[in-house]
Image 1 (cartoon, one colour):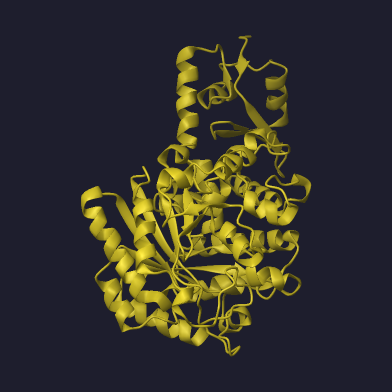
Image 2 (cartoon, one colour):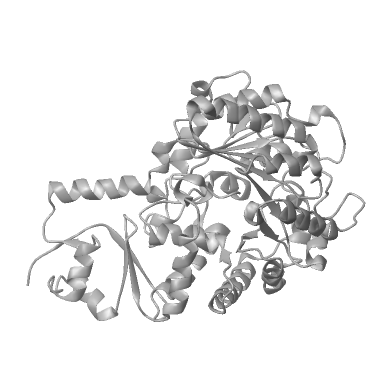
Length: 487
């Protein structure tokens, strides 16, 4: 019996009584209890099928060598590549104004008018200048609000300024406008016709009845019919897939997720992001009305994920984006660009957000925290008055890195799913008053574990059809490693 040494790995048991092993480099394997016990007792034959698989996936080795350690260090650096790429996602708050008054609005938007609620073109240019100083080869500019198209001319001028600046710099440049669609007019349509690298991200919470529960005008009149009219107009005038949508799950539509998926299917969307409610802005004020136990979300999400997979088996391709974030990490050598689930966190490192006055926050949630409470803890500086070095040398970034490196956090350090997971210090601060969460009460932790457990139960099953569908979801995504996902 050949002696062997272990590389670091963790394990957990799945429902089918298989034992799932995951190492620091993101490789995984499932074993039965007998083979697992042999590994622990050092009674496994390295030349057996199981032994060879464990060696090829870097769980075991006959001997530590400098070559293998260098190779494994390269694999680990690949998983953490986003840390070296620097800030790729730059979100711009173009206005605090909005023509909606959604019950769960996390941005605490205003109905009132006035330029004091808008970002000026002078401020936008300063923010673009800071964004382009990022070492990242890829730059995504995402326009948020409020409703950003209420300040549409500055949006247009900012895009033009960035594109002209990029003629010399030659970044991989992309734009996203996050809009409720109801402000779309001929000016916007004509602009988008001439700027095909501008994507549209919108919100759709399900059927008319579900959508109108939360997404309403200040008059309390539902917005669904106007949304649908503008969606059809855009699809008539623009490339079909230029518009993507996501949904926010409140208590009103939590138990109707299947109906939400059917609405997306009926409107020919090929992706859906079943996004849980965040405790910011108006949502926090109406938390009792809108919120639900995380266990209820998990139960409904899992059932809906099965339904989405079933639709794919029946021939309709639709990808669930939350699951796809984890699948990309599980099935590829890379991390994903979703900054909320990285270790250390990508807040400020992979993505930042610029307020209307040029204040730079580490994330949208950090900006929402300031808007709702006045707490400016997670503001890095101001793009109008400071340069990039001054902004990104703010000590709060170091604090975020330390508090979000889950490899060293209690409860995370020994979790089997750690290589695919991450934590959000701002959400932790809101929930626990500390950048580090108490894992026994961390709802994100419960949710992430439940999603990954479900995915591994499929990936380790004998159901080749379902496994093929999960693989198809990451084969049909853009480069999640670098480009991020609209948050």
